[in-house]
Image (tube, rainbow, N blue to C red; front, top):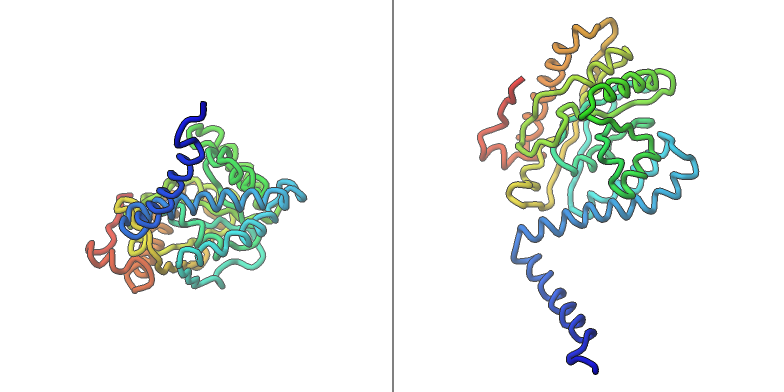
Length: 287
């Protein structure tokens, strides 16, 4: 015997209720808007990765596939009304390997990275990303280097291989030396792996600083609006003649220069200015 009002009627009523609730939540709840935006951001990247995989698979695992991923991701900033302003791109060495080090605030770093990513440059990422569905496979095809941070021996071995790859295959690598995302509007102490890598390969370090997102994005406050971000490429730091004993001082010196620029570009009205003025500026993280 057919049950009233029937399965299809119930589904239709639920759909209508959902269609009513979603716009209401969007306009009435900043937290709901934050979760909707982040869900779409991550879902859209996974969908774009599905489209990229067959195109990248033609070459197999190849750093040139990063150009395809970059091309497919560049438009996302427009969907969210985020203006990315790049300065200092002329500091990239034109024809040699190097190690890029950048501050790490959130998954939105991807937008700034794609805006300024130089040719034949791939990120070093935690191994867990490899299992992130279509995004993990697309990253693998694009030559992203995965390391297991929990297994120090494996990480050191991978970094040694990367040093050889830099020199023999003319590859650049992008590293987030803070090691984890920092949502506090400052800069965490740097881990030294990227600096050991650069010294071992005797290649320059190119620091890149992204201004604070705090005026348009804050995970703690569940806030995600439109805004502006400045990406500053700093002059390369040479490592010729340096030894592993010089790495601690090198890491501290690079971090200090990056933190100085971070403060400057995060309080000049081009990213994070309002938040940082209210909070009294950017605090120095302990070394």
